[in-house]
Length: 364
Image 1 (cartoon, rainbow, N blue to C red):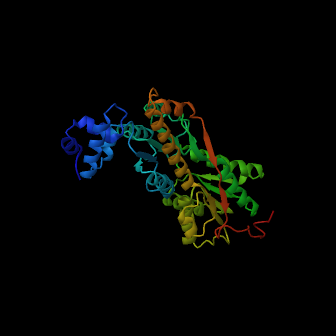
Image 2: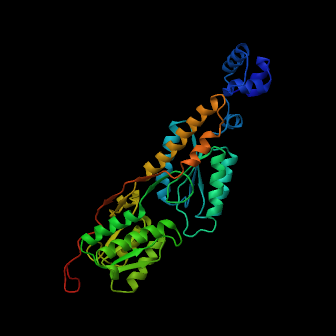
Image 3: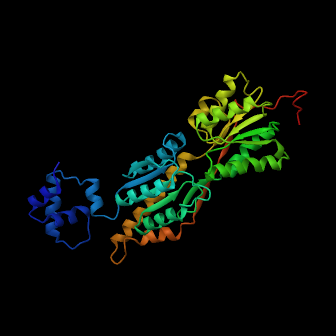
């Protein structure tokens, strides 16, 4: 594989001239010189590196994905959706863990700017009353001014397009399923404290319980989005009887933890108590968990498609004489309020059943 310097030397031109020809620059170069450089490049089997292309073009073919917790399979499904679309378009996906820290999101976004990324996807939820939110908004605006596209996959006021699900409705609908089965006392294991998604899912749960006249039977318990949190929260429920009719966890990982704790304690699921989660990850199907199916793959793929399509339009605009390369970046900031809300679906499985009749558990 030959280098750009070797191509320039063999063609008898300056390295800058060879670079302009091979990058497709609109800089005026004679047809004879252009043909000679292309012929030599073909003869030497020259292939420009991604870094070299980035140095002579506004952006690299890189899509950054910022995830809250790289261990959470929720983000794996999203990342697969991003990467499938990106790969087909000749782009590379870079996954970065931010540990639910806004400051880390800001620094990772800066790194993506340094790499001249085509776009950055914020896959995780924001924080309630986040004091660093204004700094993140400024960082997003600077990236947009540079022509970097940004997309959020959660409800966040970042001034960029969003592809989301309605987490209040998600929790409302799975709670409705439990209520329809006759469950009156439902324990809700919450997500990580301070997260917007935690608040929205709790609000959806409480809203359905209140609409059913069951506000007194709504038991909110601290938890998290991992197996250990669901397991620990359920052990606390078991230690303080009577048991609720059902346990609803804020995601599938925590629900599987709850299911494990109940079965280890010899409690029949769903004979004595029902269990449900949200997200419909692969694990949910393995353990026959009732849950809510979210279009995670579609969220990732739509976000990637937006970035790639917008980058293509930007490239076309910059190739037109008199059109500034940053025009599309400014336009992207202007229509940043656009939000796409995708649908979800309750998936009943074997961990939920109708509330048993009995003297201590009267059927409604």
